[in-house]
Image 1: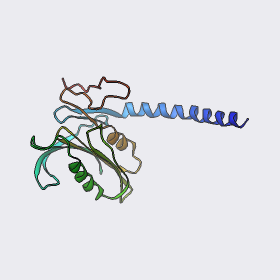
Image 2: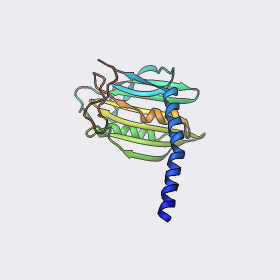
Image 3: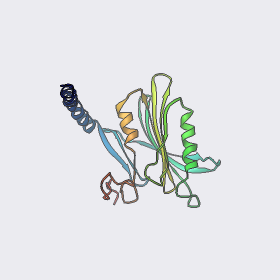
Image 4: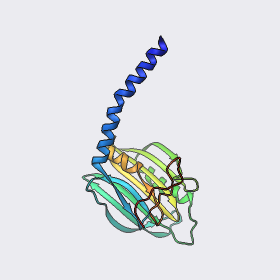
Length: 197
């Protein structure tokens, strides 16, 4: 009898959650769109009708060298959603965990780190994921990944629990020059393509 009641409760809870998940998926589809930068080799979900403003600047590496970088920024009031792509010279290694750690250390200075993990984008592509809480009920969700002499710093600074900010940071996708995802979806060898042919 106890197993039957437990199974019924689980079934009831799952069926009650299904409409919420479906509604959330519909909301995501209605409120976001994919932004792809073929030249800077990434794609990310952004709020509908948002087009990032781009700016070039010089990024200071862990060795003190100055290398070119480009920030793709969406500003929503005080909320900031950005992907910064740092380009390292051909003389540098294709990936360098020390560069990734240097960028993550700079992000850690922005508030109280509540979660952090060394999380590669895919084997051989080092990365970090961070969840930082700052003053004024702000949450900074961030990630740093490196592939093919490019470092990608994704940062979503918004109120605690803001879903579009979480979606933005979690959706970062690294692509090759043809627009193929560098990480093929689970269970397949066919990469997703983001239209950079």
